[in-house]
Length: 353
Image 1: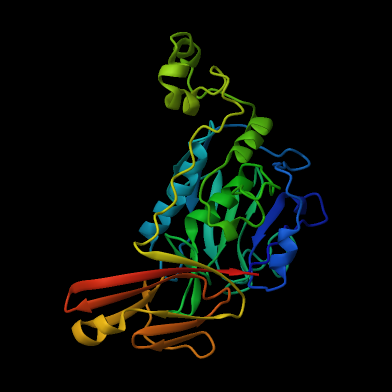
Image 2: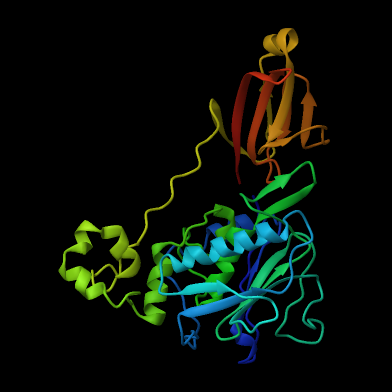
């Protein structure tokens, strides 16, 4: 995938409290991003802006109009907040939109919060481009671009809709990091890396935990932690103590939770790492298809019903694609007879730029 990401800082002191995650489809940006310094290092705001409390409330002022519904939006936002509460002293609680809240979240069109008149509130740019931006403490706002197609799931290009589908959990987790006071990290594996969306990771890493410890101190969440530590719980109940009692157990520089296991690839998946522009043809058992069943082609779980000139060509038992950013993903052919699946094959395509 090609994405261009920029950290934008305004010139005035007030405007310096804003930051953005900017993503757009730009071919030249990939090579530029990969030459960044690879030092693993979180960064804090120059003023070390932070909250003066750990129990924060948030409210949703508006919801996306494309694809995802209000219920799934709430679940995605709550999941993103949960990733941070799991590794920090913070707790987050949603409150109704008509109540006061520390963090305000909304989905907005291009011109929102008087962006044409204020340097503080940047305009959105329609589909793709900038996805969201957030404000450092104590402003506590997250704005999502309502033109995007938000989903619960991995970011991918949908040929069925002809748009990028963007994972709300991933983007929200990144933006919440800004709301807590973290700037972009130089660690390429961190959720706060400016290039984070390319990785698809949805885990708060050790780098962010160290940043929070530096900003807020390494704190126990429970008053009983010292007593538990004296009872030997740091060893016998390690996971519990890592989460609630990092200071008492000297876990301040140890990542509290293991990285989630990667999603297993479909059975019989072949991996293809190819140069940009190369044509690939995949065949799906011509003999089986012609004699026993019908063949169906999918990309990332979505049924491909039509050819797209210069991108994808469907020819019954085989498919031909041109390797590029849009066509990266997993292609699966399924041979069916009525509702019975006779066989299936998958190919995972990644492009070397």
